[in-house]
Length: 103
Ligand SMILES: [Zn+2]
Image 1 (cartoon, protein in one colour):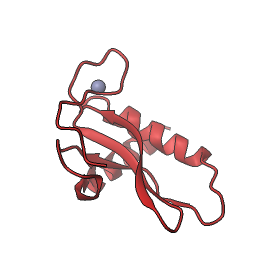
Image 2 (tube, rainbow, N blue to C red):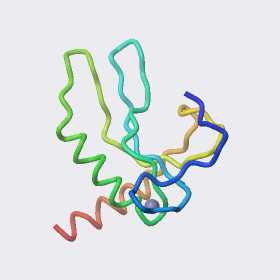
Image 3 (cartoon, rainbow, N blue to C red):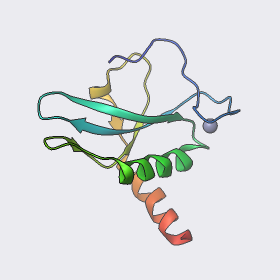
């Protein structure tokens, strides 16, 4: 689905920042493939939503034939299609490392 052309805001309750990231995982049933969105968030909330995405991922139940990748962080661009979103693996690795260090 193309991104709507208007401004999107962070999904965190009471956070008024524009969303700059999308936490999403690529899902497929073997025929259709799409990005399953866990949340849209701003710079400040990205760690929270990234962890939330990883938690939901661990709880996901897949039916045979379905595949779901680990949730990643994508940079949001207004008007761009999901397929064109840039995945920020560096940021994912940094957040994952920071989280493991505090556990
Ligand atoms: Zn926020």
